[in-house]
Image 1 (cartoon, rainbow, N blue to C red):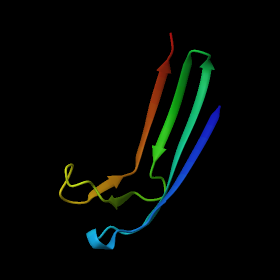
Image 2 (image 1 turned 60 degrees about the horizontal axis):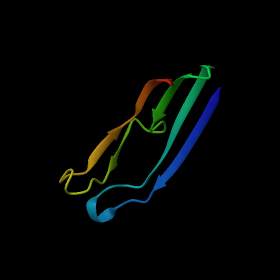
Image 3 (image 1 turned 90 degrees about the horizontal axis):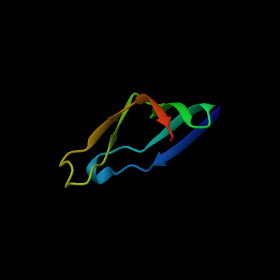
Image 4 (image 1 turned 90 degrees about the vertical axis):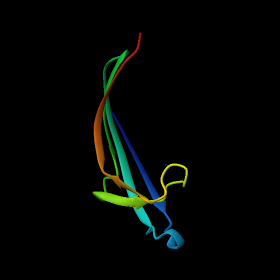
Length: 77
């Protein structure tokens, strides 16, 4: 079993009205065999959503990012 945690703090951007925020990401993985890994990954555990500033080429407005949880299966040959 492997557990990985990652935290981040992003300073606010008052000019573009994005508040500062702190977030936590996590990954829990299990290797039942050397060639197989099953993982559950989560992003933005501390808040259900938060604003982020997007580059103008991607979006003229700020982007709201939601919490995400997903599973990943890796098979190596």
